[in-house]
Image (cartoon, rainbow, N blue to C red; front, side):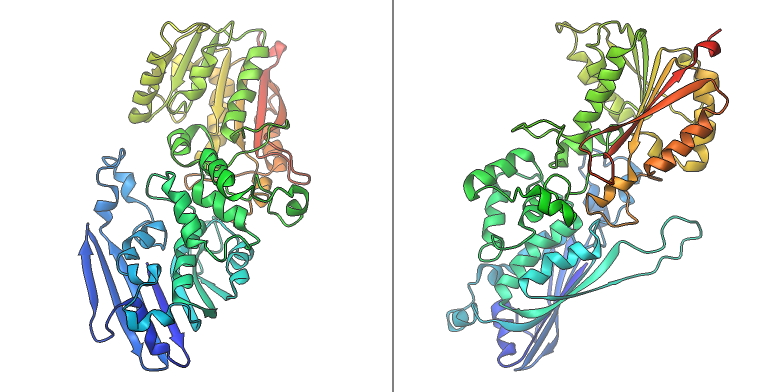
Length: 494
């Protein structure tokens, strides 16, 4: 992860004083397992170029985290990509420039605009090139991007979402750095720290003088603050964000959907609680935005409630038990198996279920059990309802037919409910064309693709199916989540 700052033209040599780093010395510091170096590759009166490089310890990145014991936590890109981590690593080295407080002899240059070239990366962003350019071009930069070609041996993607970005334009060093410190985390859409009210002050401080006039201010604020309450607090202080939904939808930037859907259901419950900020409309006017995951749970609960027979339920991939806990209140339910392979998630589910004890309206206590779709379990046979909420997209496509065959011909639930993302809606989220909503997704299907698979799974005639949508409908794209209701045919029950 690196940033190259190049200034050219008359008096460009002053930049080293604004950075408060002597070109003749190599800045090399190690703090909390991170090595930060600043090296001047050019230092003349009319040109200054400095490389800022950060190298974290990959073990320290996960040490002390709740999932630090899990070896898969070490398999990530945080060690390499330019993100909020990088900004925090180099903030100490650039404190003088960010605050605009060099030595007194150079204070006059803080407000001076230089011909700048800023190169940084690699950046792992879910935003398409068009949106990346729209983030920086209003600031007066010419934007260029480079991305590497992939050489996978299987058909997954044909181009990388990782890019190196170069900005060219006139700006002050202070403004340029502040803009990067605010926009780099927006690009990466990841925060490694707890987001509190202090983040509002950071937005106002780093956005001073340019953010209010930025056409993508709403995108920047929402991806920075993330949580609905913090966004509302910002709006109370600074005024409402843009609400011209009709006009924005034409350019693919609706206020509800310009932010990528980070929280994609059952498998990411814990991640959702930590970082979800975006919301979707449920079709009614409401001051309190409704999260898409909440809409999924409502839709599934409504379907189950309307079923004539729902005594026994299997919640496959139950995660931390949020959906199972809701189903515990549905009249007519007598047993709920919350099936989850992750031991840590089951522990959290047990804690959640324990709080249901003695609560008014609870008709069935969910039972957390270990299980997986990859092996047969006779406990799953002949249940009234089986639910796969945001599960199938985490399974390789070539394995799905076998799994669905097991469910429909061996387990034989009376009703099978399946939810999965609608790939077409990713365009509404302004996502990179080849990217998925979550890093663990193996595929995402369009509405037509899902319908084809449902036809294949039900061609033996044991089940009929109906496909519905969940979430705000966007014309031409459908709704963000697809819900399939498979019902066992009467003649198959005899």
